[in-house]
Amino acid sequence: MINVDWFAYKMKKVFRIDVEKKDVSFEAYEFEHEDIDDLIVPSEHLVKLPNPMLFKTFQYVDDKRNDWIASVVLGNDGANLYEVWIKNGKSIAYEMHID
Image: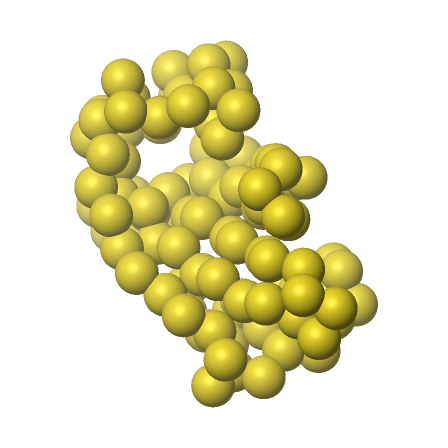
């Protein structure tokens, strides 16, 4: 399940940052493909994702004032289809979970 625990786990595992779960904000948004900037989701990834897409977004500011955002595209069944990680406004990692 994609939740604050998942975000904290990924931050620790991938970026070696301990996250205070109480400091994580999260929201969900639905976007059409034409609403997505190519810098957030490259077009070659976008064509593989549903339209519209449900994004679950987590945000955390670390003790060095770095702004971390993880946006996850969820399928109708709640499965994680795609992840994009953003640090200080720049995409730093993508992960596609579908073919």
